[in-house]
Amino acid sequence: MSGHSTYEPKSRFAKWWDERLPIARTVNDQLVDFPTPRNLNYLWTFGGILTFCLVVQLLTGIVLAMHFQPSAAEAFNSVEHIRRDVNYGWLIRNIHAVGASMFFFAVYIHIFRGLYYGSYKAPREVLWILGVFILLAMMATAFIGYSLVWGQMSFWAVTVITNLFSSLDGIIPGVGTAIVQWMWGGYSVSGVTLNRFFSLHYLLPFVICGLVGLHLWALHVAGQNNPTGLDVKSKADTLPMTPYAVSKDAVGLGFFLILFAWFVFYVPDYLGDAVNYVEANPLVTPPHIVPEWYFLPFYAILRAIPSKLGGVIAMFAAIAVLVFIPWLDTSRVRSTKYRPIYRWFFWLFAFTCLALGYLGSKPAEGVYVMWAQIFTAYYFIHFLLVMPIVGLIETPTQMPRSIAESVLGKGSGGGMPAGAAASPEKR
Ligand code: HEM
Image (cartoon, rainbow, N blue to C red; front, side, top):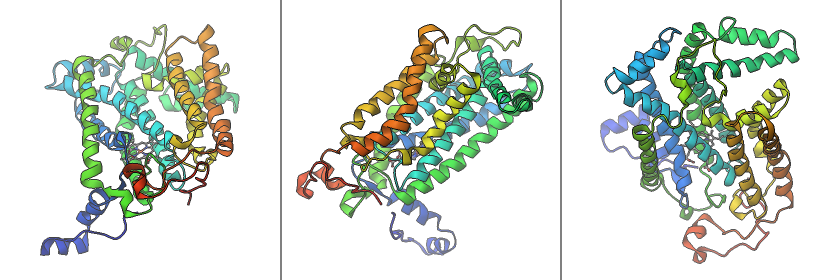
C-alpha cells in the first residue's frame, strides 16, 4: 500500500543511521507520506483518539499505582487518599476513571463506523478480528480495574460476574466451581482476589498495546477503507497522511478533549454509581447490582436468557459473533451508503444496542425482561440472518467510479449504473 519509500536522509549521520536502523524511514513512510484516501470523514479520527485514550490510561494508571494499596483493608481508603491528599491526585484519578468511559465511548463509535462502512470486509478481516480481541482485552481490563476501588458496587459486580463461571458446572459438574475458586484465590471475593486483579490490571494494558501494534500493522498492509468503500485505484484517490489526515485527527481530538474535560472538571462522578462511595461489605448486597454503562447491553443479554448457563453463552456469543461478520456479510459492496435495504437494518441494529443498554440498567423483571429478550433475539438475527440474506438480494445504488470522483465530482470520471457495482472493490 505504501509503495516504495520516499525518505531521503538529510545528513551523513542520518544516512549512516538509516542503513543500520531505519526508524526515521519507517515513521516517514507509515505516518507522514502514507497515502490515505482523500475522502475520510471525522469518523476516521477515532482510531487516533483511541490511541490517545490508551496512552492517557497508561500514564495516569502508572501514577495511581504509586499511591494505591491493593489490600481489602486499605484499597477503598487509598483511593480517597489519592483524591484528597495526593498533589493533583483528584485530577489524575478523575482522568483515569472518566478516561475509561471515554475510551469505551470512542471504541463503540469506532466499531459502528467499521460496521457502517464495511471496514471488516476483505482485505481487512484480520485487522477487524484483532479489533475484536482488543475489545475483549479492554473489557477485561475495565472490569478488573473497577474492582480495585473496593466499593459496594464494584465488589458485588465482581462477585456476580466471576460467579457466572460456576454455570459451567452444568456441563461438567465441579469444573465451574473450581474455576471460580481458582480466580478468587479462596471461597469468596477477598483481598487475595483484589491483589491478583491489581496485578492483572497492570499487565493487560500492555497486552492491549501489543494488540494495537498488530492492529495498526494490519491497517498499514491493507490500507484504510473510506466512506465510499471503494479501493484506492490511482494517486488521485489519496493524500499524504501528514498534514491532511493528521490535521483532521487533531481537530477531532480537540472536540473529544472538550467533552472529556467537561466530564473530568464538572461531573466526574456522573458516569459512576453513587453506591460505589460505600466501602465494600461482603455482608450487605446492594438492591440492584449494575455494571458500568459500557457493559449494560451485554448485561441485558446475560439476564434475558432464563438459564444461567444460557445467559453466559449468549453474552460471550454476542462478542464472538463479531469475529465472523467478514464472512456473514455477503454484500458485494462495502459501504452501507450504497445499500438501500441494509441501511434500515443497520439503524435498527444500532437502536437495538441502545435499547439493550437501557434495559441492562433496569431491574430484571416483568416487561424489561420481555423487551430484553426481543432485542437480544434481533441482535443475533441481525448477524446470522439479515447480514447474509440482505447481502444476496439487495441491489446497490449508484456508486461513484472512484474515491476522487466522490470528492471532486463527475468531471473526474463517469458514474456507475445502479446495480452494476458488482464487487468493484473485491480482491
Ligand atoms: C485500543 C483500541 C483501538 C485502537 C487504539 C485502534 C486504533 C485504530 C487506528 C489508529 C485506526 C486507523 C484510523 C481509523 O481508521 O480510525 C484503526 C482502524 C480500524 N480499526 Fe481500530 N483501534 C482500536 C480498537 C478497535 C476495535 C475494538 C475494532 C473492531 C472490533 C477496530 C476495528 C478497526 C477497523 C476495521 C479499522 C479500519 C477502518 C477503516 O480503515 O475503515 N478497532 N484502529
